[in-house]
Image (cartoon, rainbow, N blue to C red; front, side, top):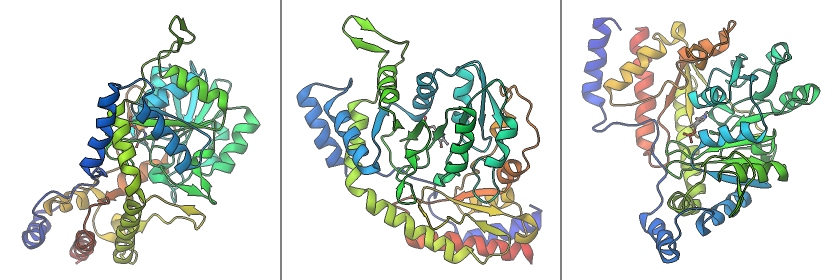
Length: 389
Ligand SMILES: *Cc1c(COP(=O)(O)O)cnc(C)c1O
C-alpha cells in the first residue's frame, strides 16, 4: 500500500469501521441451559468419559444425521487422522496429498514416518487435481490423502478409480465437510475413511473434537479400539492404541447443538447469498461456484483476488479490511509444502501457489448479522473502486 492509498483507506475506515472485531468465524453455541441440562445427567451418573451415555448418544445421532454406516468420535480431528493412518497400517512410505490445506493434514504423516508427495490442485475447486495423481504414484506410495477444501467435494469418482487401479487406500480429510452432500448422498461415504473436525472454528463443534467415518465394519472396530489404548478387556490389550477419546463434556456440547443445525445452515446460506449478490460482478474477484449436485454447508466464503483486475493484491485487501476491524483469514497460506520438515522437494505447484497468494476467506457464521455481511461486501467493493481509481 502506498501512503496516499493508506491514507484514503484510513479516511474511509474512520466512517465505516466496525466497533468490535468481526472474526472470520465464531462458534455455533447452543443455549447454555441445554448443555448444562445434559451435563446434569452426566453428573448424576458420575461418568465423565470412556464410552459414556452422551458419547454414545452423539455417535448414534451423527450416524443418523449424516447418513453414514459407522462413525467413531475423537478428542480432535488431528488425532482422528493420526489414528486413521494407524488403522490402515500405513508407515515408512509416501502419501499423495495437497499442500493447500491446514497444517494438520500433512503434519500427521510425519508422525507415521510417511513423506508427503504434493499433487497440485484444480484452480476452480482448490481440491487435489486427479489428473496429477497417477504420475506421482511409485513403489513407495502407500495412500492418497485428499482434502475436501472449504467443504467442496473432491472429484471422488476419479480419485476412487485411480486408487482402485493401483490398490491404494484413500483417506479423506473432511474437516470442512460436515453435512455436505454430493448427488444426494453424504460426501463422507467415499474412500476407506473420512476424518471430521469439530474444532470451535468448524460448522459443528464440540470445542475440540472430531470423528472417523467408514463404510467398513472391521475398520470401524479398529478405530474404536485404537482410540482407547487398544484395550479390549480388563486384562487384554490388542493393539498399540493411544488416547483419542471424546469426553462427556464435549459430547454434551455436540448434542445440544443438533437442534439448531438447520437454522445455522439457513443463516449461512443467506450470508453466502448476500456476499454473492454484492461481489459476483466485482472486477478481479472470483467466487467459488459449486456444481448443482452439491449440497454445501457454507462453512467458508473464499474469494480469489486477481490483483490486475481488482486493483490491489489479496494481502493489501487483507490489511485494508483490518483497518475496518474485519478479520479475514488467508486460508491456506503458507502452503504446507513450504514446511522445513516436508523433506520431499516439491515440483512446481503453480495452482496451489497462486491460490495461497490470492484467496481470502470472509467472515461467515450463524450469528453474523446480515447487515454486517452487506457492509463487508460494500466495503470490499468501495476498496476495489478506490484502488482502481
Ligand atoms: C481444522 C482442520 C484440521 C484439524 O482438526 P482439529 O480438530 O483442529 O484437530 C485438519 N484438517 C483441516 C483441513 C482442518 O481445517
